[in-house]
Amino acid sequence: MVLIWDNASWHVSQAVRSWLREHNRKVKATGEGARIVAFNLPVKSPWLNPIEAKWVHGKRAVSEAERLLGADELESRVYAYYGCDPEDHLVMPQKVA
Image (cartoon, rainbow, N blue to C red):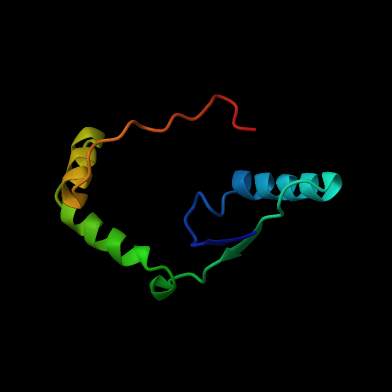
């Protein structure tokens, strides 16, 4: 499976790269599952990732240059801008591996 990623910090983190490496080793050893090949987009290439333009416009619409917004205020502005209903937050288990 090919996974196309931009250069977001969580995509290129050591933890994620380690998980991918371990996953691929397990698939190779057991013969079960799909190997994941991460293909990173070039840095500063928004034309290759169409969602980038949406993020830029959304960020400009909800942020303020004069001050940092609190998490609750930022969340409500994002939902309002994109016209979405609030969703429950994802919860990370204590131990991910």
